[in-house]
Image (cartoon, rainbow, N blue to C red; front, side):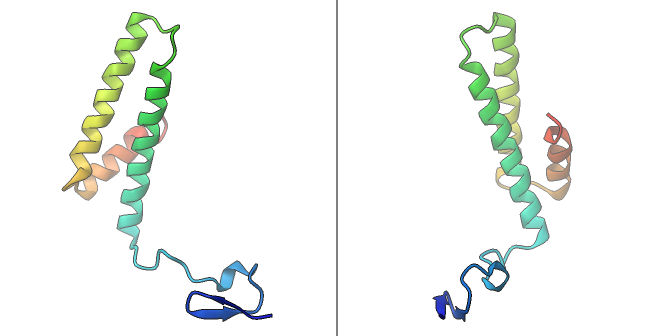
Length: 97
């Protein structure tokens, strides 16, 4: 049975190797930038989740607030015109947090 998928017919729809990729236009640099932005937003989400804990001490809350503001500033620094060095610095900074 032939199944039409996008611009081609596939004999076996479960054969993923024949399916066209949707990210053909991405280059490696753009892919790295997306990975860094995803890393930053995931870290921001974790900090926001931690701030919801009612058992945090005031010093822990203050530390998380500072970290949240730092992450937001880092996101803003690459939002418009981040250089490759900026992305690399942020990737190294947040990769193991």
